[in-house]
Each structure stands twice: as structure tokens, then as C-alpha cells.
Length: 130
Image (cartoon, rainbow, N blue to C red; front, side, top):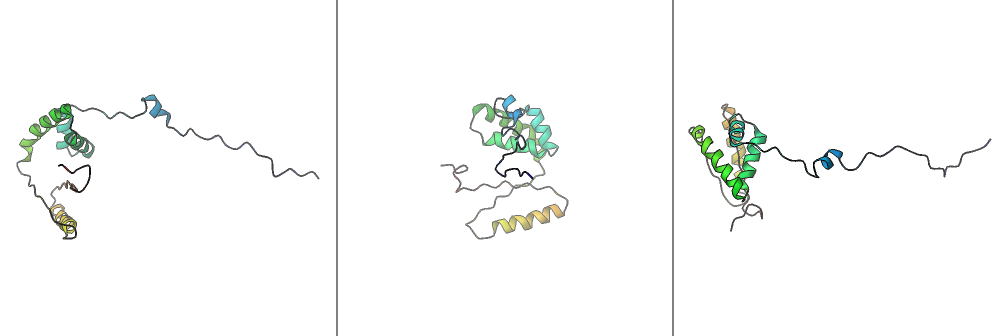
């Protein structure tokens, strides 16, 4: 009886490409859809979180063309903000800011209202303004 050597390497399976071919078609980056001011406003008012997050990203941008778009978005959204309440919470580490926000948020949403939290860490290199 003839034995096959254990040292023989079998062909195996072809590996899939390590780069997504769709990314290569788009020049290396997936392009985000550019919305008009009206599309941003409609998306924000309808509760579209993706469009809201992209509008916030525009607001954080220092590019002049982004700032113009953001100003228009804010102007068109202001008439819908008459019933909104904005509060600011600040304090040193460990005083219970997060606990308060969670408790307050549960109270607000428990009444069937909507709540948004925008958190900024002033010690962060990205958010610190000197």
C-alpha cells in the first residue's frame, strides 16, 4: 500500500480580494450624498438622524461654504423651534452630570416627548476652542 506524503500542499480555496472593489470604482472613498438646504431641513424636521448628524458635521466645519449652508438650515428650522427648551449642564468630573442627563432623559421621554443630547468635551483636542 502506497502512502501519500503529509508534506504535499493541496490547492485550497481562493481568497477573496482584501479591498472592496466598490471602493475602487469610487476613486477610493465612498462619496456622501450632498443634500440641498431644503433636503436638510425636511430631513431634520422628519426626524432623520442621518441627515441631522450630517448637518451637525457641517456646523462643525470651518469651511466658508459649509457655514453658508448651515446658516440657511438654521434660519429655516428656527420657526419650528418655538416649543423647544434648551439647557446646558456643566461641572467638574464626578459631580453626576451623566446621571442627571440619564434621569432627566428618562423623565422627558416617559412623558412622550423627544430629547436630543449634544455632548461636548472641552478637554478634547477636537472640541477645545482657544
